[in-house]
Amino acid sequence: MFNVIPCAAGCGQAALSGSTTCAVHAADPGKEAARIAGYIYDRKIIKDLNAAGLRFESVDFSHRHFYGCNFNNSEFSMCLFTGNLIRMSFFDFGIFTNCDFSQCDLQFLSFAGSTLRNCTFENSELVNVNYGGTFISDCTFNYSNLYNSRFIDSVIELTDFIDCNIKKTYFIKSKQEGVSFKSSNTAEAVFEMEE
Image 1: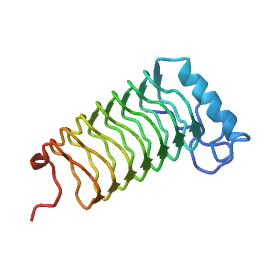
Image 2 (image 1 turned 180 degrees about the vertical axis):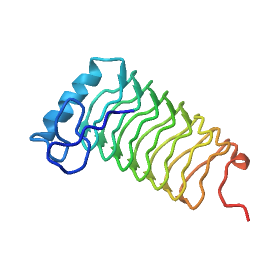
Image 3 (image 1 turned 90 degrees about the horizontal axis):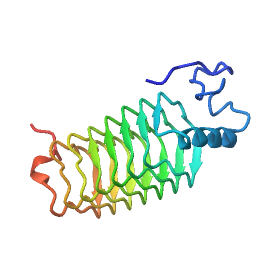
Image 4 (image 1 turned 90 degrees about the vertical axis):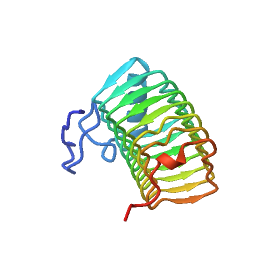
């Protein structure tokens, strides 16, 4: 997992990778985001990266392998994650707008408390992914494997899960409006707690 080096400002947060401060105390957060994006662009394999709290716009993160990275509280707008392999990484409380996660292999990730708007996760392996407490709107998960993932306490609007494997996928206490599970194995998903 990412190294936890305390922010030099003494706030208790971890410093960004390659920096002495967190995103909140960075002199120029935009410059830090560009530096981190360049670091990712130059590598196929990214391990133990802390990029929490940064804002990324129109960045191509596609065809990379991420292991043990921290993107908590970050914002992503029009970013590409296509063809990625991501393991044991955190995107909690993030904001994702118009992002593409299609053809990804994502396992043991957390998007807890995040907002996902107009994003696609089509044709992806989304195994053991935590979407708990997320707000999901106008997204597509079509033709994906969501085995053992969690959407507990999520709000899901105008979103498609067409022809998905949702075996052992938990939707307990989720609020759904305009959601399609056409051709998905809904009998093997968990929508309510058993008495």
